[in-house]
Amino acid sequence: MCGSTRALHALTHGRFGEAFTLNPLGAAVGLSAGLFVFYALLGRLTGKTAIPDITARPKFFRVLFVLVIVLIIFNWLYLVRAGR
Image (cartoon, rainbow, N blue to C red; front, side, top):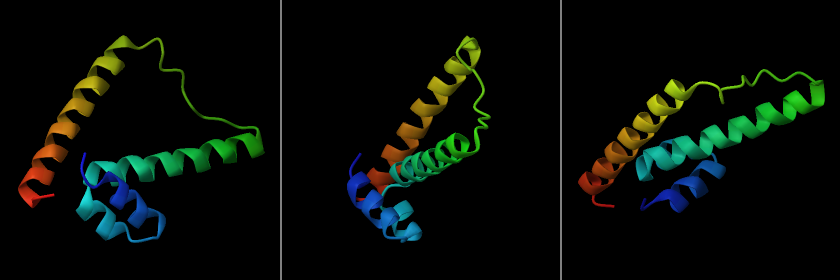
């Protein structure tokens, strides 16, 4: 996924628009990962976690798998169209 490294670099420097222009999926994944780490640390510090157990939901994983594949395809099409 060309542009992911540059997108994450821009994201870590607060240039969100540039990050999403370089690679929308890479920037979204990076931002989501950062928010999750913050959420997990906050949960550890307060002793409260609200992460649901999703392991017993096979339908959820099928839907998530299809969604991820669709997002990867659209991201690839965007990068091809943008010439990156």
